[in-house]
Length: 397
Image (tube, rainbow, N blue to C red):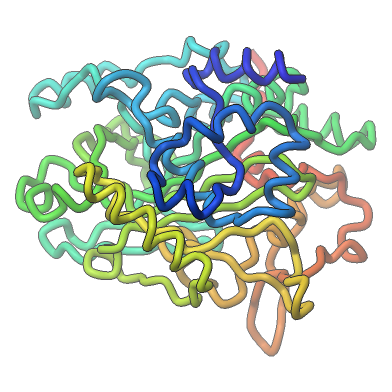
């Protein structure tokens, strides 16, 4: 297992293993950004799981965030930017995606527009292929000159996640149905990672760029436009985008580990703000890491951890644990539990995907606390990975 893990991260750009154990306070006080002393601790699943059960999950979350947002080389792309975008995995025709490391480049029309704008073509282009949240609603930005455009979204996965999806052939609906017909639950490897990000669209607007520079991590981005029937118009919007939120999930424990970060300026530039109280431990971790990053001139000093989750219930109170990202789950922050909601990720040959929404008090809400296993009878688990719902039926040649 140790050899497999280290080989995986070498292939995905992680030259050094991620430091994911709780740091002693004396080490944090000395240099919270030095992950060297803890890198060796991320050698196997048991070490990671033990760290969650006995350590400070907020410190673990910050260490993870720091490593993922470290450049591969010099001032180049971040580690997570080398991961696979879901848009190149769940293809419109349900066909098998290209192998790892052979992801198709952006369409030539995107490159041509990027050249005209003077964008740095050596940096990654993010395909922000969605502008709706999981509840079907949208979040708008506050830039009137941008026509108050919707915040956009993207999902990426590391190599182990990608390889599992390809090997089990669940990149299309055909494969997911076959898995359900065989009564085989999905079971991702413990080293699987998935990242969901939210973005304020800048495009080529220099006024918006000037406003957000120095406050947000900004990247090359594009998205395809569709008509009211969902048919491609052949038109692409190309430009820049600013990272407003980041969900990170990984699987050292069966119910996964959930981490969420937001930019501290989000309420100023989008019609959303964090509505869930941050724990004292989370505030303390932010008070350690943000100033340390600021002292190095890092743009990520402007991002804050808002919470972590790896259990359904608070062990001290027995109450459901809530966790949400204001940029990604704006409207249902007060009824959002990452682990519980994703525990319902499942598929039935007869009924399709399980409905994560439930009716309550004349309206709708989401599941929190322990998973609704009684209501999920007849559904085959998708191992907490709701992004599998992006899969399409494979079209005949």
